[in-house]
Image (cartoon, rainbow, N blue to C red; front, side, top):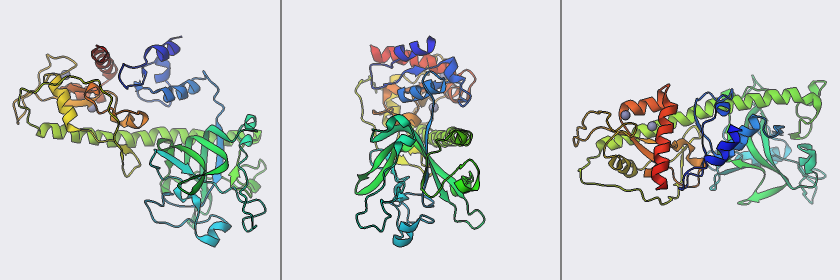
Length: 399
Ligand SMILES: [Zn+2]
Ligand SMILES: [Zn+2]
């Protein structure tokens, strides 16, 4: 089957691009995937296979009722948790205040209160377990379970709303039976930062009913955890998952591409200000470069710095020619009279967080005339251009 062959064959170059370059009709025609072309990484591939029904797609889900907060990132924002139960009333504190804080290792570690055996005022303070076998019965003997969609819900304190709503979620999360500790704070939920989405306050409109309000017991009862594992819960759960998928893809990807386009524009602005002297040469080193620490933008998008020097090197390597076709004519630069070229990252920098090594290396940067550069971002024919550039690069880096 074409799909599986590509997984085996397109395993990237001998560099650290540990990606299959992947363009597949079926993958590209997934209804959620509006783009015509994708770079797909191995873990995305696993997800795609799931979506294509090649592996089971029985999605694991866990609903968690937590205190209401705007940011859930108390290391960066000062705020008090609201509507969180007795412990919070007594102490004014809640461990869920770290739920959307990006840890130094790129993870988020979240907490849902499981309460204590015999109540929290009971002297021995033994936390209750999280019954992960209710997420998947085959995990009865296990201490943790992977690939869970964790849906965080909280009671919106706004007098006009006053309802339990979805405030955010983790995709591909690990859920622990017993709470763990990270830097002395307890957590029982964990995922990569890029798989965690926190809704802005005005987006928190998806209502979760109280179990006692309906015949099917949909929603939270007394506990802060709802496993939603009964047959009569299924259609509601599907509705939630559909909502999450649509949101995740559309909004987040829009933010990512917007912020990264701005970065790319700034890079090309800097290249324009550079003065090439004409006797520089550049050869690929084929050394892997550790990626830099990202900055986090206002929208929670990770931004990796582009180094002007590397983009300049790539343009020098191309001899100031367009890598789609060296015959393309461009105007002359004001600074030095060389043909004007722009730098474009073949594997977009917006995907950097998924890679161990830097994508901001000359081997991944191509020199393009402005016409081709616009076409690659906005043109109907972009697929063919990207494919050509990729194949050319693959040859060069394998030499
Ligand atoms: Zn570009
Ligand atoms: Zn061109």
